[in-house]
Image 1 (cartoon, helix red, strand yellow):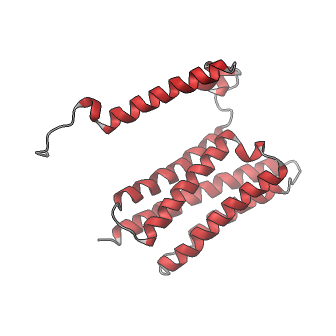
Image 2 (cartoon, rainbow, N blue to C red):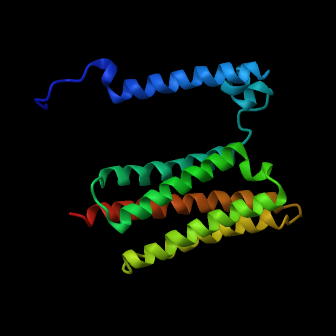
Length: 203
């Protein structure tokens, strides 16, 4: 065990984060209540509120878990590489932020609530961020196998194409959502591997 004196319970990072989130939840609950929004609508699962079966949104939930995992894995790698100003760390940080933004967008349907032009603009920003990461990645390590990222981008691009151009048909929604799910899975696998490669190559 470390000889350093133990921090008081109230100064532990876990305590600070827990109390801060608890306070933020109370504040948000009060503010939304003043606007006529019931607190139950914010804390209960939608399936429970509307009496839907528990499997409603199954694939969507899996996709959120996959992309959240990517943000966590790459974010953790960035934290471990603290003090390093390598390009790999910058790429991992960008991927972590981008993955988190995609999760927020997917959960709260941000691009779908925007206007037609706003939706295209959002996808354009994501595309530019993705291209930026791609070109920076090529400069970092030409020896790393990039094919996995190509697979992820292909499936994500197919999902975006189906959504933006409003392709209709009996299987249109399946194509969009299953492509997105597959893209998220490939995205997680690739960036987990790249994070591991970046950490081990520093030794």
